[in-house]
Image 1 (tube, one colour):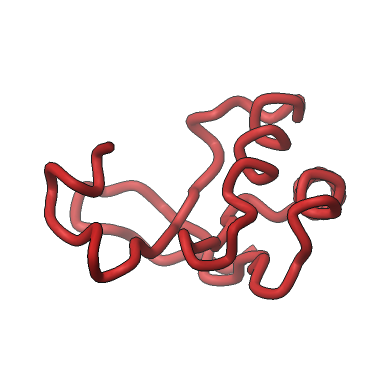
Image 2 (image 1 turned 180 degrees about the horizontal axis):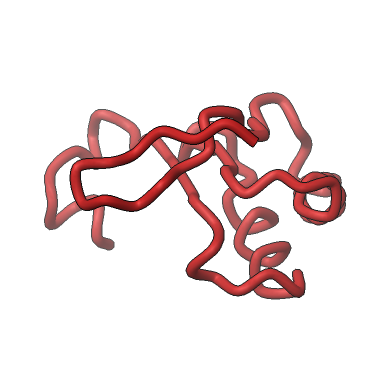
Length: 86
């Protein structure tokens, strides 16, 4: 898998699995399948309403958490460090 080196020296995959339009009911299974297929970067967003499934898949998979990259986007009303942390 091709990677890009981040400013902190960590290598991150350039190709990820996105869960846009994956139903909340199917999301956990789809992400588990993607991780099993070799994906290590999962992209989601608060507006997709399936982040819980992503989290469940990450918790259940046999890949160490420090080998996975999760990217997400917060809705504009939740922008900022304090609101996003909640």
